[in-house]
Image 1 (spheres, rainbow, N blue to C red):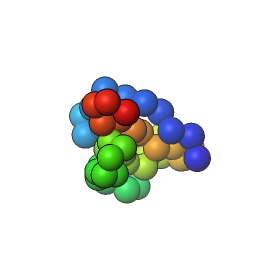
Image 2: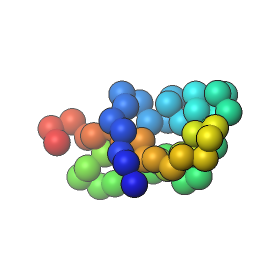
Image 3: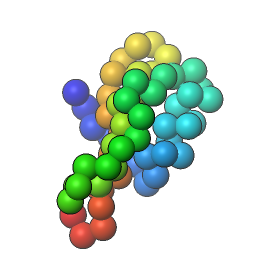
Length: 56
């Protein structure tokens, strides 16, 4: 699965839903790494959104 780096996972996940995509796994923390979620775009393509923790 592809990971796409974004500035704010929570805000981007909300935007995905506004634009017709779906949040498949809600935003959550990965200790020591950052925050991520899993989405599908309107065509059904799966990807993860990731915001790295500061210093990583």
